[in-house]
Image (cartoon, rainbow, N blue to C red; front, side, top):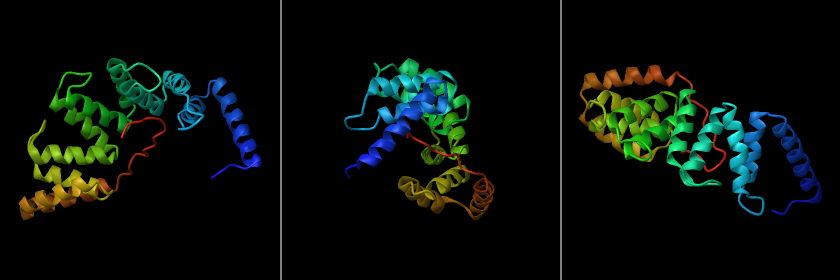
Length: 214
């Protein structure tokens, strides 16, 4: 839809206000300004998107750190640099950023940028899953169902797959049916109790701005 002159003026005014806040050192404004430079089309400026995101990340904003890591991984506005990606992911993950924790698990599981370590990967997936990250919950459920990086445990698999399936993760729902068919009555009761307890905990807000993590 084409913008009217009035809409374009409002857009310019909002952008100018955001720029002023960003230049004054507001980390949130820096991150959002970087996101505007990442918009596809004539406005897209990957180098500027990276630069503003980096300024926000250096101030300790976890979401900016996670986004910056994704940019290093994908070569968005900067040369690919897995080592730098890991550094920024670790900073964000230490602040309990679920997407960053999930991505660290992926890097460890795949041996990309870090030595392959399924056990350590599982621990990061667990932290992300506990923070309400749905793909991490699905992945952790898979690990428990197959005993990858953790002891095989149908109750744990049922718990995490159930949480992921509630949010539309199709692969989790399919595996959940398989796991449920193998569980004893006692295991189902234990899984249901764990699920009821965890379901009362709020999920972490998942906001994605740039070429970010899943």
